[in-house]
Every structure is written in structure tokens, then in C-alpha cells.
Image 1 (tube, rainbow, N blue to C red):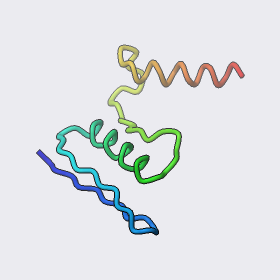
Image 2: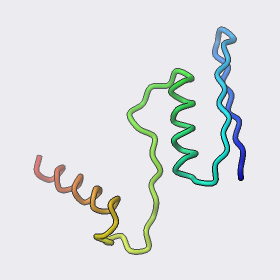
Image 3: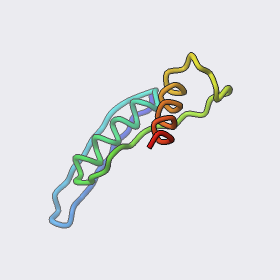
Length: 76
């Protein structure tokens, strides 16, 4: 299992660290999001975008969410 160690040192010498083990990219992104926020970064979202073999797989929740978001954009 891959191991990760992240470290940030601010201008005043304060250190923020995070270490974790994970085999899954979704989890790694969540841990990195947590680390960046703990280091003082502000952002709306850090997310993993996966490519699908069939972009119109209507059984896939991510595809359905994306289609719904696009439909809401078009309504406005």
C-alpha cells in the first residue's frame, strides 16, 4: 500500500504535516484536500474527475449528477 507524507512550513516556521496510507485515488484526494485546508489554503472543492468508457452511462451516479448540473445551468 502506498504511504504518503505531506509537510508544509509557513512563513513563521509553523509546520503542518499529514501522513496516510491508501490504495485508492479517491481517498488520496480527500487526504490532500484536508492537508491543504489545514495548511491555510481556501478553495471550494478539490475533486477527482474520472473518465468513463461510456460517457452516457445513465446507471452511473456521477454521470447522472453531471447531466443534472448541466441541465440546471441551461435553465438559468
